[in-house]
Length: 400
Ligand code: SF4
Image 1 (cartoon, rainbow, N blue to C red):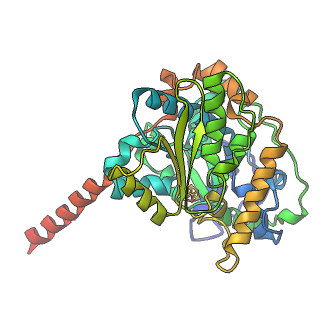
Image 2 (spheres, rainbow, N blue to C red):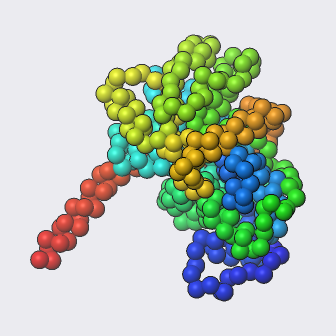
Image 3 (cartoon, rainbow, N blue to C red):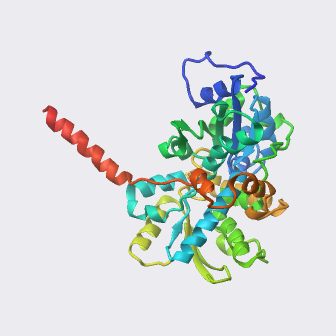
């Protein structure tokens, strides 16, 4: 990183995540990569007094440059890659009759499943989340393209969510003991960082991404930030893969809405015909839908789960208002749908940078290399927790 501002490191006794991020940015030996999630750009402006739903993507890019970040990437790009991996994974599972497949991009949901419903873990998609896909590629694909040593790269991500911090330190999301994502800042923390550096987002000229490898995104990648978005993005690509043509009606309005659980039947064409899908947000609704699966009361093919009501647009790391939750979340979501409407490319598989990634590096979705780099596994933490409780109990009884 090349620091262009006075680095506050050392000025404070407390070492929080903001300091950690600034340490990386200010270290001239390191190349810092930053990424921000689909939902962040439509909520971040509120931290600086802008109306709910203002899209500040361009201002965020300028702010990242101003604080000295070397490479600015977009988590939306990785959302498109997730669709490629998860889409093919889902097709393979449909062919083998395994169902349902659950999405796995929300780490709060993954934790919930690991702790409370370990029996369901084999049904979770093994595809890493967009944050983790981008971090892994930043330490493999990017160094290959740019001739930088992976040891010198540090990845900072800005997320709407505190659960992403927990995800970043999962042992299975590291290489040789080094985490793929080095530091996660919530939307709120990043606002504090900018304020500390004297940057007011309101008074900054917007600019555009300039990274040629991992910053372009489709409308499908953009809608990941709201409930139902992952499902809609996946259906657009699955339909094209199966039928060799694009969906006529690209906006799948039957998947949209704010009800806790929504279900729909979608015609995928080809050998699969109609598939049953469900979108669920909020943990109590999640519990209900998981119970119906375990009790064999429903037969969905694909289920999207987001732990936060509304999805990431109202994630726990962003500014929240108890009084006006719905209008605020709706304004953010409307902006996300507008981004999709105005983006030239609206399907993940048509993203040119995604095509180059597969052509130059991964070969094909679900290739051996893609499976090695972009997929993960989950562990039964219910059992682990029981063991821990038992060990503590044994220690207590032994020492008395
Ligand atoms: Fe994080 Fe909430 Fe989004 Fe899940 S739904 S990834 S917990 S912000």
